[in-house]
Image (tube, rainbow, N blue to C red):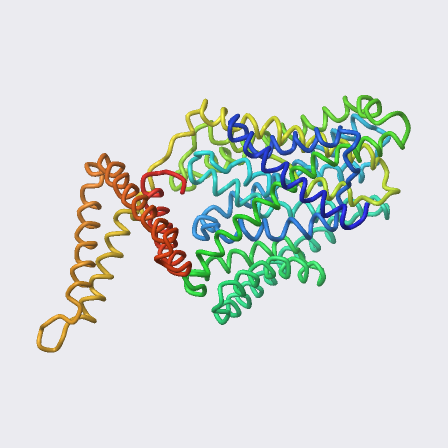
Length: 535
């Protein structure tokens, strides 16, 4: 396939993705599951060009920007406050799953060497950041559960990839040293984190000086790949480097970026993340043909060979799912039962919380890329590859599609009140309006007591009084919010219609149209957000 044909194929896949996403929304299915199924359907069509993911390209193309995006919008205080549990999941659960899957794989395929069994365990052990974010999007979960799942998905890829490298090295060399492995793991983790922090501050320093929004956005995209590629090149964890870089940049963005850059960057990154996430899932589906062809080349036809491996694959899939339950339930309850002080500071959660967290273990592109990266002469490579594919399909299609009904059936699908130790949105808005009014008053007052900007003072005074009243009587006024902003939206629509009429009549220039239209767009987005609608 020529480069032009490959480009045309990517364009065709993007068009298919749009159709599948629209169908998923209409059918109320997780978009990730619908896109994977669409990719499988395309793979089974004989006229579809053969396509196989290059593992190195898949990791370096998809992983850095998607991890950067997740880390960038991670709330650092919540991440730090839950770091103990996140590490229990990202390191403990990954290592435990690797062990369980390795033992089960050796039981069902005794001819497979132990090191190869543990390589399979390391491949399928980390829940995928891309899959987790795609499936959790739009689900109403308690805030802490979301923090834990997203925080885990940011860190566990590094754990899984390190264990994978150690298992592959042990299989190829026939030796394994636990002490050296632990030191290697610590060095990769610490080095990657330090490299990411350095990249984050360096990128923030640079973005502060790139006042042009276009250049700043390009710089932020390049930073995602640079933090991963450079860290990987110097022998530390590229994943943790990107995570640390994203956390630093997310913390610094409020003082580093201009208002225009923040607004435009959010839109650009949303498009980039959507395209990359969708391509990941449809490429996973399209990889089915390559997997079946590989099995067919190894002996019988691909489908027949896959059926022959089905019992072993089913056992490994069950081990992947059940080992997460076996780790999370004791990790949630045992420390609190054994340490009363911990239980007082962090009470026992309802059983529904560990159930949902255990079920939300979707695998994705990292597992598939790791399996494809196995050397051709690696023992049991075909079994490992097809089993990895089965794990990804089962977790994305079955667990991903049933996660929302499970959440609702367990009563976790209702919005929770904001933590009592933080201000509500209305209270914060009142504080901000009061400070704005004070700034205007200070700049407006003349030495003789008169006002230089009386109309501005009146405007900000009204905002401050309105915000204060709403904060004090929020519960009573909420019932009127929808009606209020519905009127605002009608006014915006009327203004937009008049603006377009003036433009069509040739009474205003295009630059005036774009300027005023942008103001109306921002007003509409704000109004729709306040009444809970999508802009």
